[in-house]
Image (cartoon, rainbow, N blue to C red):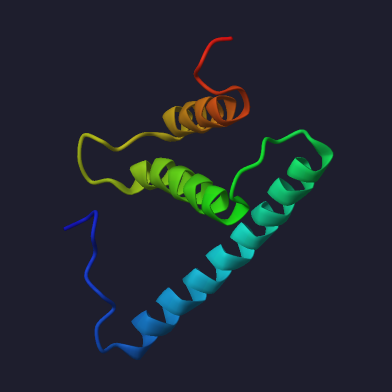
Length: 99
């Protein structure tokens, strides 16, 4: 199933690739955790769990980007992806609830 790919199996190259990717994502998320912590410290970001928030944001962006790889009607072109990413960033910044 596309949403839940099978494990890498017994292929060393696939296992190493998956591990390298996980390390890179962890590194990027660590940078985001740091930025969230700095924002909370200066009051520009409300208090949240920075690790969980970084994971949620990464997963959201990853989901949007993966639409470019879909082989079906869910596939989006570059322009649509850019608009979705811009919208997602706006929702993160401003939220959905009106004041």
